[in-house]
Structures are given as C-alpha cells and as structure tokens.
Length: 73
Image (cartoon, rainbow, N blue to C red; front, side):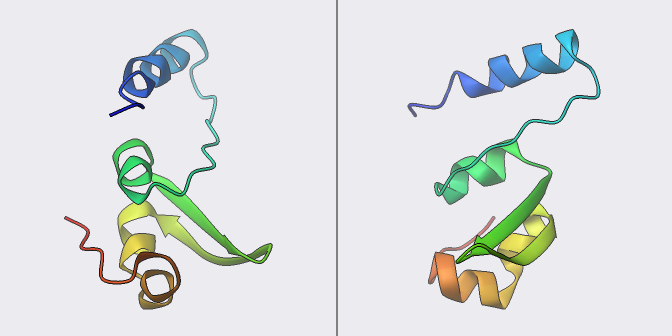
C-alpha cells in the first residue's frame, strides 16, 4: 500500500503534538476506515454525514453515493 507510511507518521504526530487533530481528505475508503475515528462526508460542498467512521460507512445514503456494493468489515 502506498500509504503504509501514514500509520507511523500519524503516531509520531500524536506523541509530539498530543491532542492535535489530523485532517485527511481522501477518497480511498479502506484508507479512511484504517486511519480515522470520525468521518465527515461532503457531497457538492454540503455535509451529508458525520460521526464514527464505522457508522458513516454503514449509512445507506453514503453507501449509495460513494461505495456502491463495497462491504465494510
């Protein structure tokens, strides 16, 4: 995976800057699922879903718009 370096880098940020949030703008759903606790979904600039990543990825409207038949495990 080309983003394998993100795990250690993100962990380092948390050690050096505790309490600081990261912002990840990404369309790779598996990457989002692996690296985030909370997710916000925008559609045409409007917020359409927010919450825990698992909850957002399970939202039927999000699945229809962005995931198709992708299974979240």
